[in-house]
Length: 342
Image 1: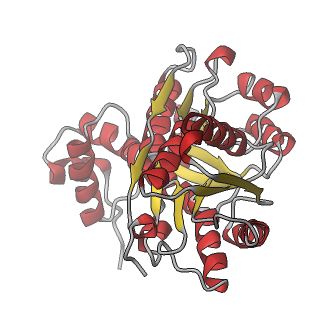
Image 2: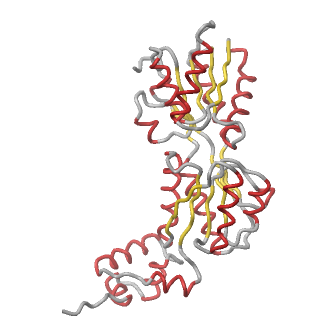
Image 3: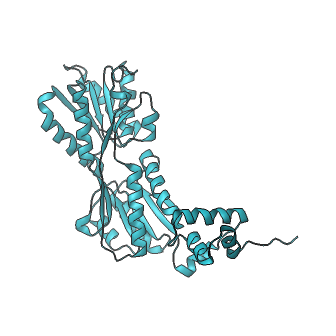
C-alpha cells in the first residue's frame, strides 16, 4: 500500500486560506496567532510535516533560540521559559535550554559558542557579569538579550526588575506585621541578585531602622533550599541567646525562604506564629508550600515574554537599537506572614 504525504496545498485547502498565508503561518513569519492556530490544526489533521532542514537551509536560520540559565532546577527559570515559549512558538521557534555555569567566564564561553551557528539568538540570565562577558555579548554573531541588570550603556537589549525595591517591600511588610527583629537571608554577594538584594535590604533598614530593635544578616553559599537550611541554622543559632528573639526572616528568594522555614521547624518554631518568613520570585513551589509563602513577585513569566519580544525584533532586524524593558516588583501576601497559619 502506498502512503501519500500531505502537501502544503492540501493544508491550505483544509484551513481555507491561501497557500502564501499557510506558508507564513507554518513558518511563523507575518501571521496572526489565530491564523497560526487554524493552519497548524489543519496540518495536524492531515499529518503534514514541513521539511525543517530544507527550510533552515533556504532561510539560513535554525529557528532555535537558546535560553541560558545558571541552574535549570530553579523554578523561577521554568516560569520564564514558559513565557519565552509562549511568544516564540507561534513564530516557529523552538527553545533550547542551556546552562551558563556559575561564573562570568563560563557564561562568556557559552556566548562565544554562538559562533558555531546552532541557534538564531540567545536569552541569557548570567549569575555574574564582568567586562569579558559583556564584550562577548556585544560581538556575538546573533542577537543576545539579557534578563537581569540593565545594560543600556553597553548597547545590549535587556529585561530588568528592581529586586532591591522588592526587598524593601518585604521589609516594610514584616514591620507592618509587628515584627521587630529582622533576619536577612541572602545568597552570594558577588552575584547580580545577591548584590542588588543586599542593597535593597540595607536601604530599607536604613529608612525603617527606627522601627527595628535588632537586625541580623546571613549569607548562604547559593540560592538553594539546601544552602538556605544551613545558613538559616546559623542565623537562628547566632540570634538564639539574644533579646528580643528573631521574629522575621526576609529571604532573597523563595528557595532560601523554604530553607528558613525548615530550619525554624527543626527548632520547634512555628511559621508565622514565632517567625514570619518572606521570599522573592513568587514561584509555584512557594505558592503550594505549607504554609504558602509570602513572596515578592518579579514577574518571571512577564520578563520571559518581554525578552522573547525583544528577541523577535532583533531576529527581524539585528541592527535595530538596543532596548530595555523594566518589570516592577509586587508583594504577594500569603500564610507565612499571616498570624494564625500553622
